[in-house]
Length: 355
Image 1 (spheres, rainbow, N blue to C red):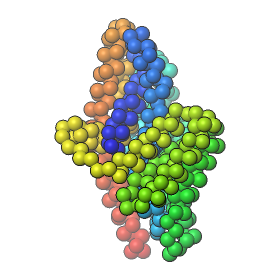
Image 2 (tube, helix red, strand yellow):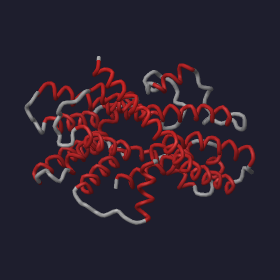
Image 3 (cartoon, rainbow, N blue to C red):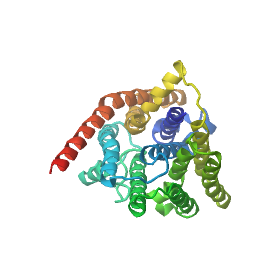
Image 4 (spheres, helix red, strand yellow):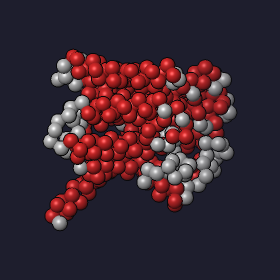
């Protein structure tokens, strides 16, 4: 189910950016105006799927039973940075190069200014949004927010672990996360000035955390019911106060993960093999699709007729090439960089232990 959700959300994000950026969609929109309106508008909330799933998997990794335990915060945060940042920075370099070449063939608002060294440095540190630098790639904000959210959860778990010591207060962490969800949904998420910071998105992320603990088959029904209530109550109140489709989607995904986590269904066959493959490359597709789409837009602007059907075919070509580029990027960039950063981290840890 996680791979199915990730694969579907990744496609919507690619199609959203194709419909929102670039001249091809300007010409092709006349063919299916309602579809393009959806893709350029509401389809962007598919990113909520990634936020909820990320929280779900983080809870599974760091606190599977809801206990804070003993956690080395700097080591955990470094591992997350080492997983997210290196492939993101390589994709950012691709985006900067694609912007330069695309500017030779077209003039459009999707073309950003040439990248500066300080701008690239801010992207490498995942601080571009916080420091006020324009993003060099669509969706770059998500990577920085994911890192902020992960770091926040790590610090909370560490503080709880230090405060409680050997006492196993199994409900303390879920209660704190539910309070964070409530505060986010009823305050921070209502203020756009916070959209560069983790509290704005913690409502969706925290629903993912609660979904993991609620999906644990070892929990008794009463405990599961309480966790479901801790997720549903703040989300439903927030929707009553100010209905936001993105929060409704996040709640739906969280409930779906809770249910599917407690039901074992075989996922075999060619369809699920394809879904698992798409899910694995979803982060790579998310990273690399913007420069690919930018170059295809430039090529079709320069060499193809400005007719709706021809430009629509260009959008389909950009979509397909984005998926292929994602598979290549995953195989030859994301995985090798992950192994390299893991080996580097192990060497640094061994040297630190020796010292």
